[in-house]
Length: 503
Image (cartoon, rainbow, N blue to C red; front, side, top):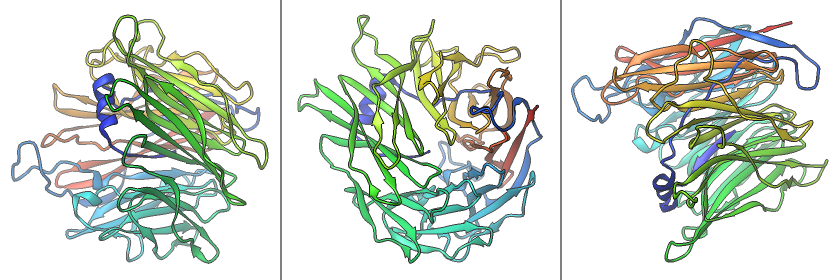
């Protein structure tokens, strides 16, 4: 699943109402494959982290307290990751060569990373701050990939990865923040924001190249306004885009949030937009979506501004759709997944992952207060067989893990076709000025492992020393985590692997 945000006054209001912050959750190891086939995962073992590549010199950028040695880790070198069911991985990051950024990648196969290499000429970004991070990666179940990025000025380019390597970059349009989708048997699909942010555009790769940009979603600058959109691809080549529409009265006293969706299929293009749900006097964010051939799932945090106690109510909600062959998604009514557990008054930023059949896991952080812990991590699992969510389970209530008074953040969650899941996150120790990176693993019927510390580093210049993690799993239940970490005056890309224990 990939996402884009449109910042607005509504989002600032949401911060006031909910004080929502990005947090992590944890997971453990699994049991048998959801359909009874494939391996039965009963545990997992993390290997020692290994350096994947040198991402170049750590550039001097603005710091809270500028000094000649202030060189914090910045967004431009964070790695991205995809992993196929067969275990073929692909990592992508921006490498600083001393004068400009160059996109670089490395291939993971047979349990090891190959040497890194730059993408073909033309895969480079301008070193202006607005270009930092404007690159994206998507992979398919065959191990192919597509990368999209913003180069000098507003020009967007894309390159496809196959067994022959990366193709020559091709222009796809102009704008900002490209988001690619790569599904089996397709050449790729990319959405991005128009230069003046009046629309979300899209293009797909067919036998003759990238199609001319077309509008998939209008983005009005007045209420009702689109404030967030997310997109996910399915193995059959289809994709689902979901977006959030906020409306408010001129006096600001009444407001509403609506979730809408469209599905793309190669045979007929985009279906008509349909409203998934509408909430009055409530705020929705963040929105997450996962897609499969026969339906989709959305999860979101729902904040109700008025409760009998006068304290905003924060809960995790979800909806799922069923789709007949060749038909449209039919969405069911929303259901609460989490937020009503004993002692929980605050939840934030649920994250979603799904397998090829549509089974899903959502994870979130909860606590008694937005600012003071202890914070706990919860998950819930969705079954396509029953179309029901299992009761929420706390994952931090395990031996060897101490509940934290600092909010975890940058949650990532992945679910394998074998049914096990992994969650990774960052956590700051503000008293010691350090950032830590954690992961946890759980399996159906086999329970959960205590969270594993993967990395830690001293923060520098008011900036976290570790990038947010990227996480993916293969069909056998093995997992990869990648992140960027400073090493003196340089940045290195690191990786850790979980090898599933099966029977």
